[in-house]
Image (cartoon, rainbow, N blue to C red):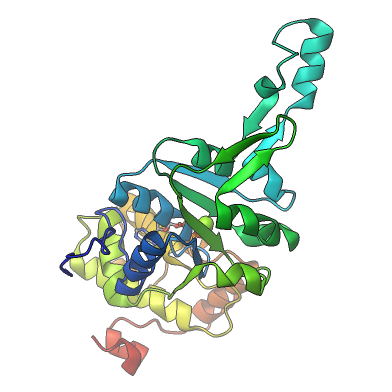
Length: 294
Ligand SMILES: Nc1ncnc2c1ncn2[C@@H]1O[C@H](COP(=O)(O)OP(=O)(O)OP(=O)(O)O)[C@@H](O)[C@H]1O
Ligand SMILES: [Mg+2]
């Protein structure tokens, strides 16, 4: 472990999340420079989960903002609940005269207003329209905004640690990228994957795990697959194998519960055809080729 003489290496990973060296560096870089960390990578490679563990590791509370196609940047700051105010004025209740009661801070607004430094997750930023990231630039830079209805300014007392995930559905604007620290989560190799599996299935038999990983990486190598199984699918598959009491021997010649791994009918059909044609499955790492020789 690196010695932390200057307070840079604040995040070192947690027991519940296996972070590669470059990912730990990217987190620490973003924390030190107070820049948002943009994380890309295949679905199911732990992008969203990371924020929870960064919050844990840094001992900070966390706020999440899950982006949808209809999300607007301004909603992350605050929304003015006009409907509630109208209801209160028609049916009584509430202090209609005081507009501040109807200003509801969004996740970004709450993170700014909070007395303690927060981790703020902006999850799946690429789901929103193209203007969304551009509309956030000023607030993320200046860490302040004005509530127009009350003319009050919300100024961040501490800059939140902003973690942004993207599945690459849309390109993000250069002006936005310039302000972020970037990390691409490479798909874990077998050694890293063993550690990740151990977090979720700590008592897994080593010989069974070998068969599991050999089948899993073999599947991922099949070029005709439309959707490769990811880490999260592997974890689910192992849960199914354990619950059903599948042994290492049973796994040598067969891939059960394929629905936990393959999520497209074309992929499941292709494997079924391979199976009925008597296609063989690898049982040793050397069957997978030089890249996998352990
Ligand atoms: N490095 C890791 N350490 C521990 N668990 C992991 C790791 N990577 C993935 N996982 C497992 O995979 C699951 C999926 O992770 P997560 O939801 O964060 O993926 P994601 O990259 O955000 O996927 P998507 O792009 O589909 O939203 C986690 O709940 C966890 O079980
Ligand atoms: Mg996610």
